[in-house]
Amino acid sequence: MLLQRHAALPVPEAEPSLCALPLTLQPFVDTPNPRGLGAATFKVGGTPSWAQDPEYYRCACGADLVYVCQVPEYMEFAVNPGQPEQPYSVGTDTYGLFLGNEVYLPACPAHCDPAAVWPVNQN
Image 1 (cartoon, rainbow, N blue to C red):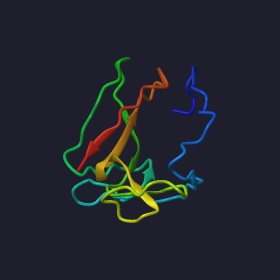
Image 2 (cartoon, rainbow, N blue to C red):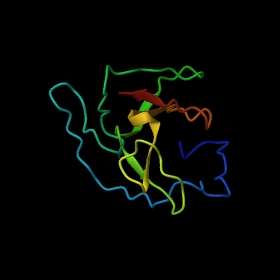
Image 3 (cartoon, rainbow, N blue to C red):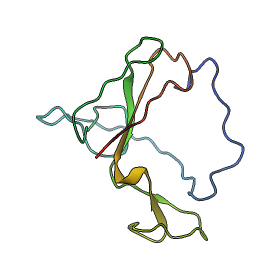
Image 4 (cartoon, one colour):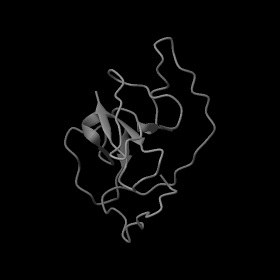
């Protein structure tokens, strides 16, 4: 996704509600369980931990989308000070995004377009 020919530029202003935190990637051996599912955690690469049945999609260019990363269900995101409390959230200083669903991002391996990423929600 980072090697797009017509890559979009970063947004000049940060999202005002959520805290921007550094993303630190660490090596991780994602050993699928007997059902063929990977670890249910925030991860880039490895094997998806489908909450329901696996979903497969095809890009408009014809390539099969491939799994890139996932956000686990009920993951909380830190909020900047002074933001309103989110109803039904776990804490006053976090927001729950994606309605608590697990989110998967498959993308086009041909890098045909920066928008060739398809978010998949499962619960």
